[in-house]
Length: 161
Image (spheres, helix red, strand yellow):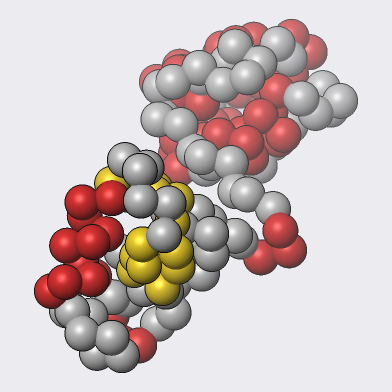
């Protein structure tokens, strides 16, 4: 059994001698055995690690756990397709360019909302297009799971903001 020091949480732990990769039992960080033993030989026990490997301003690293035990969903790119097959970037771009036609609602599967958007643009003499422009900016800026919840998976016929 070898004594290793984790490069992420800086705790000491023991691991078998014959393993090539070592997983820290505290934070789950995977490191090669040569890196962890090199870290032990460069640093005396109880000494502070170099600045590059610790959190700035004394902040503690908590590892892969997050508040209330839930993992945040990784956000995908703006034009990447979400779980429903709709892209928030495409919907936002449609709302920016030709939002007065309600095309972004048709794209999200809200046909009734698309027709309401066309009607509102005709009734307001084009003033409605300013609101769809703002809606397009908001679509581009929001997270993917929020877009899916507000515009695609909602039971509402005409989701606004």
